[in-house]
Image (cartoon, rainbow, N blue to C red; front, side):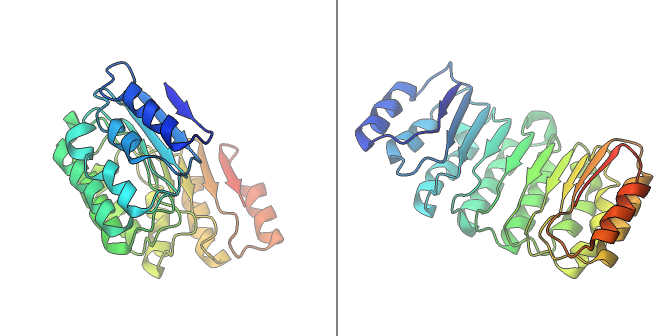
Length: 254
């Protein structure tokens, strides 16, 4: 594993790039909260042939640098299982490049992707919609999907309209995500996905009338489940009553 959580000067980044370029031994690379990353290092990442887990999280990459990774995904990251590029600036173009890569990797039997984390990446409704459509067809192995902090208007309908495409999804994070009325009304349906265990809809300004049906459906499921509902418009009485009435295997975070 290659893990970096501290800042280096540009010459050192370039030395690191030379070391990891073309590596057949590295399978995990995690760059976290690092700024001023050299382009050479990002280019080197695309030449690690057996990479299974790539996290370039909260590195404040501008769109031009994000593109170095995204435009090479289709051809370079064919064994990737976990991908996290959260808290960088992607925008629509780079978001579509990720969708192209997933589509290029082919159907579910050949696509090992299980984690896709795209929190706060500046994604808009159309890009998210395409990502979800492609994931449903070509990444049915997906277990964790994090899309917090993007414009996700319409995304819930995309997910529940393709239940077979998300049949292995265990966690869905939609924190602070500009959900529209249709999304909110369809949130209970997400809990009917066969493997879902975690649903995060915190900080979406949901009312008690909107949250109550979600909790009701969660209580009807047999498996252990966590609902993250904090930061919504819920009274203390509402929280107390639902905690006291819910099944023991349902964890309500409010």
